[in-house]
Length: 258
Ligand SMILES: [Fe+2]
Image (cartoon, rainbow, N blue to C red; front, side, top):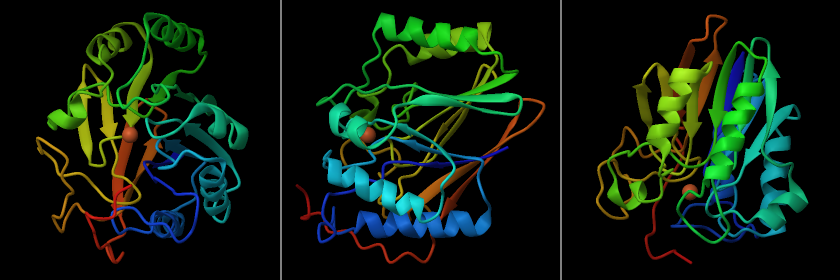
């Protein structure tokens, strides 16, 4: 089972608008063109910050670009830049998808107008119930925020606060094999108690690994727009690889901020 993750596309409502000098619709299109030239996913997961300006028109643009490549199953997760009302007006909510022996379960880690993850005790127990009720042999969870520190304090402050306990619970009690997220605009690949913990580059610009404050990644090997393939294996393992659009003409302009 082949899943394609795209994340943090930060689309703007109008085509003439860029972000940090990047035409985020164009870079999303370049990511999808390359990914779909490599394979056809059974499921696309879009793990949040679909819009930079959370307006209906941004989400319409996101959907229009994706539809040029993919008409099949898609899970849309909200990120901290997204807003619930315009997102719900345009795209389906989080949800889940069964793929053979696997179930991919999306959950909402965001709250409107705040960068940090918001998972209340009620949200967590709802997620635990959802996982416990699944009949699938193996599960993959998807949300926007990381459940672990990634080594960038300015991003780590926004992670799922009780992500450590969540991963412990998942490892002890469930068939969850992996948790994938966005938000950090960089590659994260860890194993925690047998669970693959995977963060994925943005479809536009990346943040510098190890940065203590906001910093764009300018390293040749990791600055380019990216995406992640997840091959869900029958034995419950996940074979995952990050792709990059190596020839995308990325040019950062730090003065181009809203
Ligand atoms: Fe984010």
